[in-house]
Amino acid sequence: MLKRQQAGPAPEESRSRTLQRRHTPTLSLEEITAADFHDGSFLRKFFAICVHTAIKAVGRPTFAPQTHNVGSVCTGSAQDAMVLDAVEYAFEADNIPVDFNVPFTCEMVSEKGKWISKVHQALKSGCPVPCNFDALQDPKY
Image 1: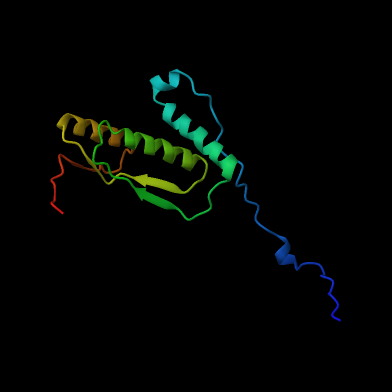
Image 2: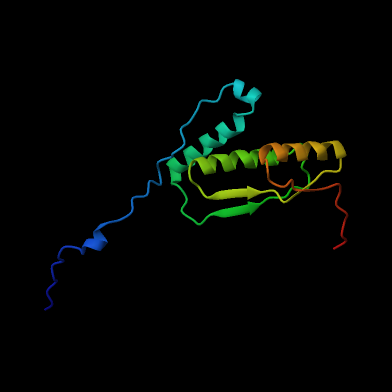
């Protein structure tokens, strides 16, 4: 009959471990007020709440830094870029390594195209404005 050996103390190097505060958000929350719609801070506050809630519920993701390219064929007033900027801000504030890049937009109305360029310049000053197509032709796949 075999006897089970008693386990001795664990080696010193195996006792230490890195503590990951996966379920502790680092971003402090601010209440959303009506004034936030007027001063432009609503989206950032809203997504900070979303990221805060997600981290408490499922934990902080643990993956390598990522950049996602998001192009838009119907950009309109560049709200997609504003939302991505707010999400990126909330991720960065809570040490989640995800960035977004808008390599191109498409808007047939030239005045909207100028607006879109101004939005991108305001959000990412110093970064190149994405390529802004006037229209896309049907390539007849």
